[in-house]
Length: 354
Image 1 (spheres, rainbow, N blue to C red):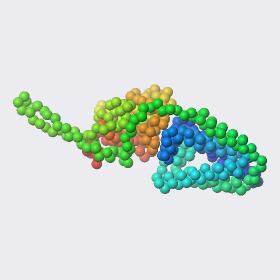
Image 2 (cartoon, rainbow, N blue to C red; image 1 turned 135 degrees about the horizontal axis):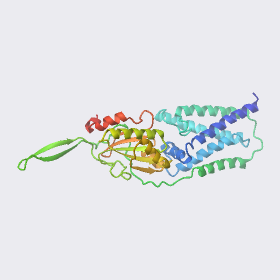
Image 3 (cartoon, one colour; image 1 turned 180 degrees about the vertical axis):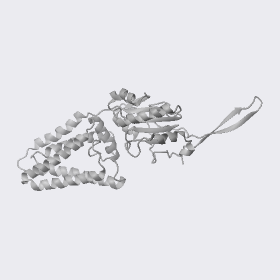
Image 4 (cartoon, rainbow, N blue to C red; image 1 turned 90 degrees about the vertical axis):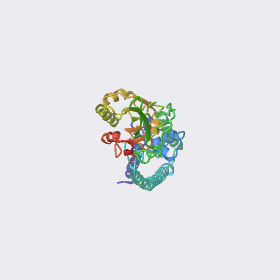
């Protein structure tokens, strides 16, 4: 193959890699995808809520720009290829540190939620891309007369385009205090959750009163942090769900809860916090679930802050007097388990602590 043809093949491959990566970060809808990227990827790196929206859009805009610029002859060897190698090298260093510190788990976010990829897979992908770029650099002749303004226009247009496609929104949701997430998703480790002993007096007859101690085996009441949404959420046993209206797995989980509630008259009250993405699908959601439950809608970023940036939908919490007893999330190892929940609901608190 001729050098020119080979160089164009490499340029097309690298261009496709960056453009697909940028487009994937906008799936299934720009605002939802970028907001999810901010909470799950940028917040964990220490970016503030004020900076993350700007950084995410600029980063994705640069990915788009590099995907286009690699096909342009302007400053290809002087700027575009070195800048692309530098960006990929930064990603490799970051992912290597993440893997070393937290292990090879979770989605690195390179292709958003469209193509989940572990950190190690992303490192391999980036190293291969760097190798292709170095090969391309050696194949290409020196840059001829280039137009810096054209290259600058490509970059600025892509970045501004991202701000237009996914404009930033101001969260209208109330600020609430979220309880600290426990290391064990099954049982809360809060030391204040002690068994409560209550004493009641029973009258045997009008002249003789016998005091009888009845043990109420339940956790001490605490604030879950969700009372701003559901005033009675911290009283007795409750099921709190985190759903996206258009999520098939969420609908299936709600359907299971409806069936469990139908079979058990003592099943706890169910409440739902919906992500406001595709909010028009909420009526269809309840139709599929087979019942309608009290619900609140929150914006995408607030939703991920509430459920936790390491969690995923569908999310189901079993709360008892405001204490987190069980927390299911996602569709993998910690996915909703109706059989386990049913058994846990029947257990006294002392048995749950074991």
